[in-house]
Amino acid sequence: MSTDTRPANPETKGALELTLAMVLSGTLGVFVIESGASPFNVVFFRCLFGTATLGLYCLARGFFKNHGFTPKKLGLAALGGVFIVFNWAFLFESYEDTSISVATVVYHTQPFYVMLLGAVLFRDKLTAAKFGWLGVAFVGLVLVAGVSAADLTGSGDSAYLAGLGYALLAAVFYGISTVITKRVTGVRPHLVALVQLVLGIFLLLPFTRLGEMKGLGGDWGWLVGLGVIHTCVMYVLMYSAYQKLPTPKIAVLAFVYPAVAMLMDWAVYGHGVSLLQALGIPLIVAASLGINLGWSFAGRRASVAPPEESTPPEEGAPADEPAPAAGAVAASRTGIKTGGTR
Image 1 (tube, helix red, strand yellow):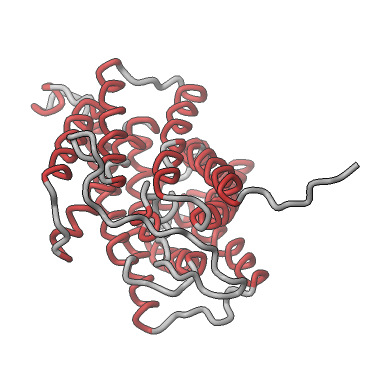
Image 2 (image 1 turned 180 degrees about the horizontal axis):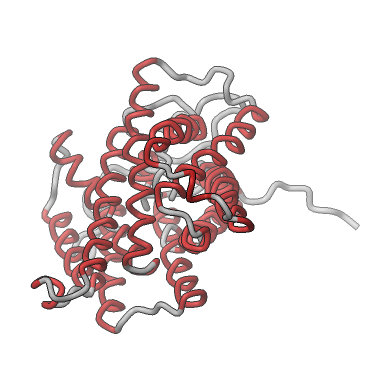
């Protein structure tokens, strides 16, 4: 009996890796809330445990050899890390003030801030199609937010409005980090993420209330999970998948994350979305795909540069593509090169 020893299709393996990474990402909100810690405490310990495990992984893989960092690249990675760390804190605060579902969907307006920042800072061309998709996303955002007239006049839930603001601010901080980290080339994304995690420990220490952690007991497991599962394991899976998948497949699979997040929010906390909010979700999804894949409203792909074929770097060599930030996954080849994880 013959045994097929041929290697598995790299694209299939990449799809499985990215799907698993997005499923893990979708459970992040539950870990944050169940830990019972304040948002800044959660981010601090995520950075602490993430540094330990991701650092060991990089050491075992020999990534510190020929790391590719220069003083400028290291400074840019650290600057991007400042925005990523606070992006996490604002997102986690939004979970508590709104819900995991609403915060996650609002947070997924990230690609549009990246697009606008690129236009302002680097004079990237904004086509009519991009403006159109931006309008579609805005309509979707208004529907998903579920803000009533009472909320706007001050007689509604002010905490809910603040939560929406935190989610939007987190998305903007992600966009800023993406634009900065885009300039870091020739360095493995794992190392860029590690720099940002180490920075986060020192950056958040003044905001961390360690006295609140007394008596946390078994809830420490949730914080350890955030560092080990949602940082080290998830990063490794995603960075591996990015090397194997074309842009369209990355763009589609990235939406496994909000789908799982909404499912977990409903299954664990009983939080659903209203019919009006549900109408806004596909608008944001379609607009994000339209921006990232260059769709036009005429039914044809807009004129964009063809995506590069991804080829894994040689073992021990730094990746050729710009290293992702440690924040969120952008659903496109451009976004993947400049974005990162949740």
